[in-house]
Amino acid sequence: MVKVKLFGIAKDIVSASYFETDSGITVNHLKQRIIDKHPSFSDLRSVLVAVNDEYALDDVVIDENDDVAIIPPVSGG
Image (cartoon, rainbow, N blue to C red):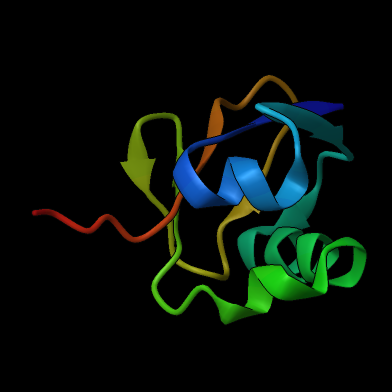
């Protein structure tokens, strides 16, 4: 299992600061799992996923014990 941390609006949509998921999936599959459970997540246009403190492309495989974070778009003011 992998712990996925959520920040900002992503945290609000999922109603949790983290959740656990299976290892061995791609970043794209992870995002799709979130959308399947929380359809409004698909409204976020530029969500970034970091794996082990580096931004990850959709084809990166998430391994056991990886540090994964969902980083939504940020607005300033």
